[in-house]
Image 1 (cartoon, helix red, strand yellow):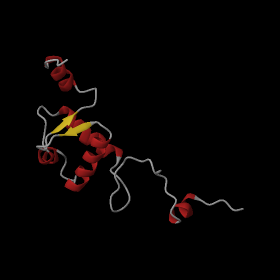
Image 2: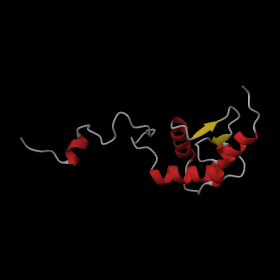
Image 3: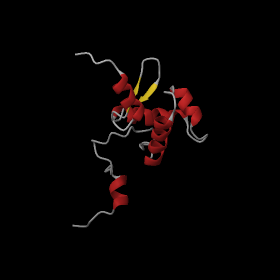
Image 4: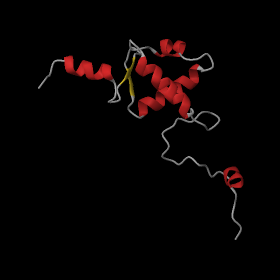
Amino acid sequence: MKLMDMTSATTRGISRSGPHSKMPKTHMGQGPRLGTVQMVSAVIKEAKEYPSRYQLWRNLPKGMGYKRLEEVLDYLESTNQIMIDKDGTIIWILADNPKLKKLLEESTQLR
């Protein structure tokens, strides 16, 4: 029996990303790169005010397309790192957010 190299395996439909991958797929079959996700995450975390999608997009480097930003936001939301309010405001909800900790400390406790 002859072993297949990775090139022939990928041409026959075997992919490296498993069925449990949370990264959204584009029309090319690839999700956003890790560096892109980290860059968008950093901008959201460091924002003084919670941005809308458009405001966030305007604060990113010019090479980032709006569709790619949407894919990154979908990924961050599906992994519970951000929440998008009904008015479009993006809130970083991962436990390392100092603004969220401050809001929780200042909030009124209900039973």
